[in-house]
Length: 272
Image (cartoon, rainbow, N blue to C red):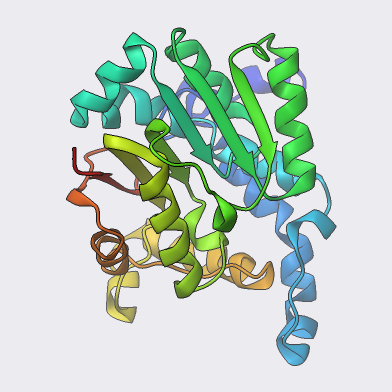
């Protein structure tokens, strides 16, 4: 749509659709739901066969939509959530190390590197098309000296006492099932330095059918869950996530205050 057509929109509509820095940005979500047309057309067939359809086999526009839908997230994590973990924030500002598990197309890696210019940033991504997008984005941003992008599986993360902060944004539920969730969290725990912090954000799936009806954001998740099931992902509810974190040995497990109704964010620490 050309500039003149955007100008026809009311100012508040332009802000909602175009300002990707706003925590309530909806432009990316509109693109994401439009990109789901493939899933809604194919769901009947896959429901009958029980198969899955990985994102890498979808129209590449879906990956672009996912990147755009999550654009505000990393800015909210650094400016709103991390002040609730002051020790981790101070370490990064002084030159610590950060690992982003499920780096996607690399938007968050670039944000973290620019927000913490003294820190080293590492991203790990399992999906090869997304890994290639992230690698190119980091190179285009001129950040290859401080940002490393790895193609790999979080279930095989083997670093020990390495990072001050580990982030997982809409990632944990994509690593497999409950056994994999526990494995990935245990490996993230091991990768953190003593006193380090995990920031994990998930879709805010409620714990009962009744709760789905309470908020528009929860009702919207029913459509999202159709896509997640089709590509082979699981679902972690708001009640299940803290139990998983406690089971992995984390302490100080708490829900983070943040403004996005489509995210459920928790912070947890590795004991010093």
